[in-house]
Length: 597
Image (cartoon, rainbow, N blue to C red; front, side):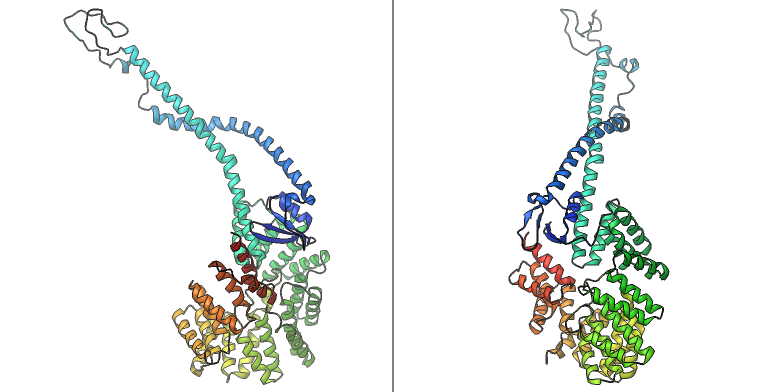
């Protein structure tokens, strides 16, 4: 499936708005039956109309109709031959099973059995002449008992009835089996496949990648021959599950299925090579990608990271800067974080402060206006202020960092072909330790160090830092909230709830921080206490009109309860704050579906 067709048409299918897609892409979706002529389309700023009423699609709809008529004719002829061939074997098996059960009590039919039927004497001392009908001669009292011949005929008649019944049963069962095998099962299989694909595509479009992967797996298992949507499936397997071997196999199949998939197949395989630490193959794939599409920024970023690995920092900076220029409308802000981190590395290598100041200015351009990778950007900025000995700016920036939702970056839709491990908290850990060694007398620096260790999955160090924080006996609600978050991640539910309660009580005194409310609202959602969650998200929304979490989850939860008033404007506000925040995108779709049920 080509991912860079010209965008023209919006699609409304199964209660969801998809696209924009090119004319060719919509035609391909019609041919693959992922959409139908009764779905609606529109051009920008135009009215919605049925696909069948748009002249642009008349040719492909007629083509599909002719193909369906042709297929129906071919299926009829094929089915006739198949039924003839299969009926014999199926009927034979069923006859053996069914007829044995029905006739076992009456076989074999022979004279020995009929001779045992008694012909009683009515009057022993009276001469009698029993006729074939079993009636005595005229003048003698008669009573019908039957003869051996009639008994045999009765048994044969019953046997014939049983055989006729068996034959009819066999024919009916054969027809049912054949219909189920050739018609019902394939239809159900295709229906399940298309339904799973529809759900998977909706989750993917809304940035819910984990859920999308689940349904792509189901769709692939039900119909692995349908390779069209599996650029996404193969990339998700690599990026999320790190199933590099299977992911590359599926991407290869998708590339063979449609040569237009080559760019994104190679990009995904290059990402798999990075995970496998096969740098030669990764470089080969990314360079091939850029020959086909010089503006594909994921490949440029990944080549920058590979230059960093090879200690060529200046080349890495060149790549990151190029990706920012070429991808001004990029899906995520990873290039800015990579660039700033590389500039910090170059400062360490050369001692030239201009690189540190360049990194600072680069970060200042995004941390206040963009939410994706905001926390990571604030961390690097606080590190720079620490190195520049600008204490006031250091503590101010660190406080913003600590008051940021820990799930904010994770809940943004990202470019899946970018290697994000180079800007993970594990990659930042050494810098975290530098800050701790320099400022460990401050409770906030201890908390930051514990948070870094937790996110880098260095749990022993995180435990040490938060134990140190407890010994400080701080009443700072922000630091208490981080301690509660640590306890929650470590599955210490009761202790987490108790600590979060203290943070919330302390925060009520001046209502300075957002994090205690964020964690409380999320806790209510986890416990499925919807009323509590709505109340806490609303409280956060009243406190901070720019809280995208509060706006997004209020739309989701209220729509779930059928409370639609004011939600349209609320979800528009959320989308305007950060267009690629997955809960906001999902809330928009969920609201539309809920209102149009």
